[in-house]
Length: 358
View 1 (cartoon, helix red, strand yellow):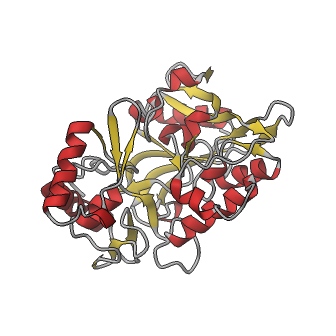
View 2 (tube, one colour):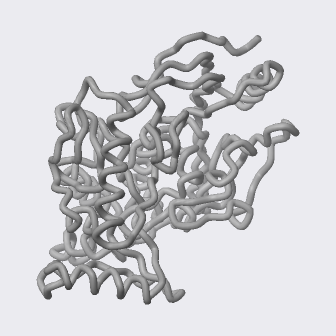
């Protein structure tokens, strides 16, 4: 066997939350053949499989995972300076790819700077921030189809991209992402559609891609959304809840409830972003704070980030059950106050994604 199967490997060190129990079996795969071999090994033993990348958007049960965890460690990237196409293996660190693209003058992912994790996770989550999402630039996703063991190239239309969503996320047992090709723009200027980012660069007459990357990193650092040693909020999975998307009538009802409770005055108006199809995206962080959940709130070893209400943090010595109890508390506070049920963003391993149990 080219792969090495290890037993009882703790998973917490592979997650940015530093939570979770052990994997019954664990293997690292450094190429497509190793991925296939690991999956076949598990199939022969009728074991479930969990794919592990950077662990930055992952919540693992305290009991761990009673199957095979395959950690993707594939590397390699290729740039075409003429066309702007970039192909990177699933195991490449995402922010390193962004930094190199910006350094080469390739626009399209500069606003996604500072996001932890690996390239292979980006199409699964349709990663987005500051007015960009990877679906806007993905040209193709190379996958291994489980069961047929065929390697396929999927076009964007085959990926079913949505807001923080994709066909990969909805059907996680069908494909394993092996590599992603992005169609970037040589010589392009930065995307400044997001107001906070645009305002941070307002003093620059002609901001560059590098300026935008530096500004995004600064904004993320101010919200403790970088994995930085010494930051008391560093053990998190980033934004724990997705921004809710409602129809216009529902959004108006939420705004009315906010106003009735004194939270809708002119200086504190509910943020809302029309999506162009009649739906409205609201700010989950705004709703959480107006539901009475303060930044820095603690529940023993877990709590809310002191810098951003959307991030739940582990201060050390805690459990996944405690984190999920806090998530349920926040979800219920928002639902009670505004009638909106927040949907969690991370991937859950051995944990009820509906927050019904820890």
